[in-house]
Structure formats: C-alpha cells, structure tokens
Amino acid sequence: MPVDETRTMHPEPRTAPQPRTAPDARRETPPYAGWLVRLMVVGLVLAALNLRPAITSLGPLLEEVRTGLGMSGAVAGLLTSVPSLCFAVFGITAPRLARRFGPASIVCAGMTAIAAGLFLRPFLGGTPGFVAASALALVGIAVSNILLPAIVKQWFPDRVSTMTGLYSMALAVGTSLAALSTVPLTKALGGSWQTGLAVWGVLAALALCVWLPLAVKHGRDRRAATAAAEAETPGVEAQESAAAVPAPGLRMVTSRTAWALACFFGLQATAAYITMGWMPQIFRDAGISAGTSGMLLALTMAMGIPLAFVIPRVATRLPRQGPVVLFLGLCGLSGYAGLYLAPAGGAWAWALLLGVSNCAFPLALTMIGLRAKSHQGVVKLSAFAQSIGYLISIPGPLLIGVLHDASGGWGLPIALMAALMVPQMVAGVLAGRNRTVEQELAA
Image (cartoon, rainbow, N blue to C red; front, side, top):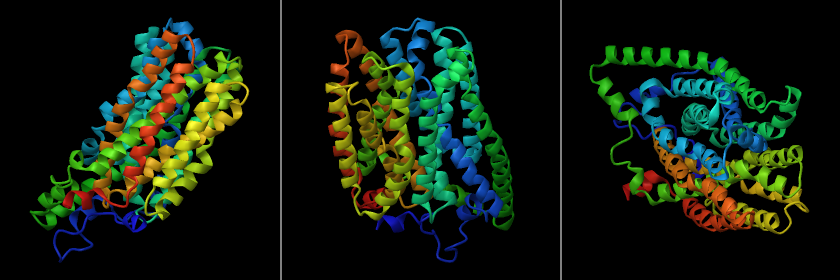
C-alpha cells in the first residue's frame, strides 16, 4: 500500500550482511540529536514560508509595477512566467548539487538567493534589473522546491504525510500572507511599491539564520562519515557512490507514471501562477479595489493552510488519489465559471473555490513521496516531475497577458484557464494509480 511505501527510507541493501548499516545510511542519515530534528522542523517551516512571497507579493502591486517600469501586458505576462522558467531550468540541477554539497547546504544557498533577490529587485531600476533580481530569488526557490520533499523523506521517513502537510501549510501561509499584507505594508511604509516588495526579503533572511547552522552541522557529519568509511574499508567509498546515486536503470524519462505526475504538476502550476499573477488584476478590472483584490487572493491562498495538512493525510490513506484530483478539478471549473459570469458579484465564492482547486500542489508533492520507494528515488522523481512540470507551465501566464491585450477583456483568458483544467484532471488520475516508479521500471 502507498502508506507503507512512504516509510521506506532507502533502497533494499545491496548485500545481505549489512541490511541496516549500509554505507549510504551512515553517510546520509546520521543519528540526529533531538535538538537538530527540532531545528530542522523550524527550518522546513521557514523555508516553505519563503517559497511564494516573491510571486504573490507582486500580484497586488502589478499595476503599480507596470506603471513604474513601463511594462506592457505581454511583458507583465512574461514576468509572471519567469517563476516557471527558473523552476524548470534550475530545478533539474538540485539533485546533483545535493549529492555534492548536501541538501541542507543547497537549501541554505537557496534562502540566500531569495533574500538577495527580494532586497535588490525593486531598486535596480528598469525592467531588466527587476526581472534579473526576480530570477535570482526564483532560482533559490527552485532548488528548495525540489529538495524539501527529499529532506522530508530523509529526516522523517515515518511521518512523510504529516511533515509534507506541515510545510505545505507553511507554504500556503507564506503565500496568503504576502498577498494579504503587501498593499497594507506598502501604505504603512510610505506608499512606495519598491519598499512594499523589498520588505519580504526580511523573511528570507530569518530562514537563512536557521539553515546556516543546519548546513554547517550536516556538512561536518558528511565529512566525518566519509572519513570514517574510508578508514574502515577501502571499497566503501565506491559502495557509497553507488548507493548515493540512483541506479542507472532508474530513468524517469521511461516511466509513464513519472510523466503523468510531471504533466499533473505542470498543469496545476500553470493554474496556480495564473491565479497568483493575474487574479487580483481580474478583480480590479471588475471594479474591486486594490486592497480588496489582495484580500481575495489571500483567501485563495489561505485555503491551502488547512487543506494542505488534510489533503496529504487523506491521499496517503487512499490506494488511488484520482478521486481527490477530480474533486479539486471540479472546484476549479466552478470557480472559473463564476469568474467568467460574475467576477464582482460572487468574488468571495470564486476565490474560495479556486483556493480549494489550488490545493493540487500539496497533493502533487504527496504523490511524489508515494510514487517512489526510496529517498534517492524521491529526489529523482521530484526533480523530474517539478522540472518538466514547470517547463510545461511556462506559456500559461504569458498567454493570459497576450490574450487579454488582444481581446481587451478577460473572457478568453478565463476560458483558457478552464480548458486547461480538463487535462490536469486526466493526468492527475493517471499519476494517482497505486504503483511506484521502481516497480514500473523493473517490470
């Protein structure tokens, strides 16, 4: 059953005499002290809080940013596609970087990039500088996005659903907090959109303060374990390398389940980034104030706070996750229909329905943990599904801007959003089948 599979931390031992002391286990999972585990929990929460404010803080101020920088609708659409582009291009490098430097070190570097990008982007002047600094922050988000599911699998193998729910909930809190607070913060700090956007770098700096000692401690443990293994047996290093890097036969590109999960991840990311980037503007064009539009986006994102904890627990108890996928998809279709017919009249209801639909993200993360048996398999599947998925999602926000400029309204863009929900549901049902990529590729 999938629930049992989430409890497997490593692949089956390669040799019978060492079932529980394989070199990979010694190197990758030292006996963590209680304080270190608690610090990792705090680190996961703070990292997750920083995975969306760079994006959702921009939506409520997009009109001011466009005016200040002289952006067209197409360029603004390109800006909302930058997250997906960075996640696709740089996310694929996360597993290799993690094997070389350790996951904690890479997440620490990611928090550094987020803080630097958020502090710098409003003050570099002009659209190119804004986009470049945004990309720096998004690179940090990309590698952290990939590695957090693997860190959960490595540190908490018996609590995958609980910890996935915890950091998914924290991610939703950060997302909704940025959407809700950016406009009031901007007004409180003097009314400058530059200051209103830069203030979110403080949250990333706080996360960096926690991840820095985690990275230092884990780096020392890795070096000590490697030195001890080399002193113990000359051939251990080769065994470690073989264990740390998944077998060549585990090629995600040949797995139908991995491709279905990548498509599901990509289409839900398309919907999420369109919502985060354009929904406040849709409401503003319908006559709703900027502050209320930010609150509506905050409601949409806040739905992930309780549901991001509930959905992973429900999903791990089901042999197939298809029913959850279909429920979320129907909520999305209902929200888009309302947004098309009466964007202002039922704004709060549409925001709520789209918020439920956006919880496909924690579901996708949970399925990554369920569809692979081992920590190494989760790393590869996470990198494949998220990188390919974000690559798929790149055109969506850009097309919304182009269609809006071409048609002069939001009818065609909303129709496109609704149309994309159908293949998302199909891919999610296929990805939710009761199997793992290791079983599939072995067969």
